[in-house]
Image 1 (cartoon, rainbow over the protein chains, first blue to last red):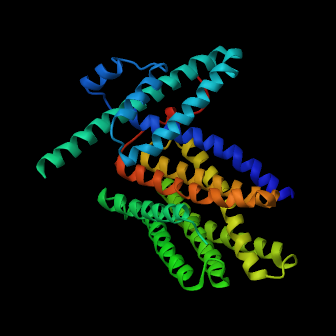
Image 2: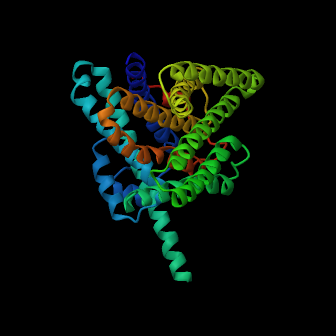
Image 3: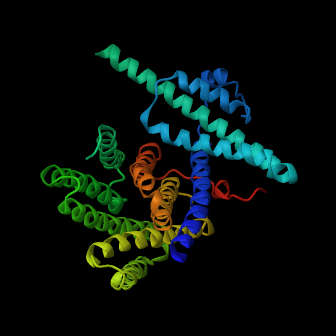
Length: 134
Length: 232
């Protein structure tokens, strides 16, 4: 009984740690991609994103046809955003440095969602162009 | 017998695995991550063979049971070698590939001996039990090795975005499966739930790898500081 319990605890801890790192790597990979003028207008992100933008951008994403490649990363970032909200309401109240950090992370989640929106718009345009050609 | 939803999950899983190989081929990353792609290609072949065995012998037959667990053990060993190939990528500049290979083979042998020792006295169906035990222990060894690789990546300030995502998604996959096996061992009453979750977990690796191959180029870089978890 000891061995499975040990494996279970270790796995859960590593799952959480690597899960967060994976989300951060997704965000980091999209951070350098600039947003087009039109996506900036639609999302309201001109220079820097805010964590409050995330739910609104996700709603916009639901209006676009889904690109299969982006579905899973967006779900992962959604879960990460939920975790950050939880941390903001609990741990961050006790430590001010965490509050600033969670806010910065939430803003990066919003930027990731905006980059995904940009891709989906491009994907929809490609599909439309293909249909027009056909 | 499997229901329609299980067949759909199976088919989608196999298509995702094939999708990884297609993405890698299209983006020119097939040879660079050869073992990872061989693992995905082997998974597709095993899926087709499992379907063949199931339709000929039945889902509850001994033949299918044996084929399922043996092929699972072979796939786990292949995935383990995929992990060692990621080690070779990370430590490539240190000329440590030979050492990594030797270490991986020794660890695989050690895990096999440990699994054999565990089941030797406790099971009447020793060979079948050995394969299950070996798979379970390899998942945990894989998890520990992936975690160590992740620690090395952060310590060495690795910047290759694709490599980082491939390693992290492999770590997620190993931890999900290791936790699932451990939960089944701890609470046998939860077995049916744990088994039902396996196909869902099976999507994690192919989808994450397909995304890494499709969306990221092999020379795309990320700032290592962005991966650090500690608030600054």
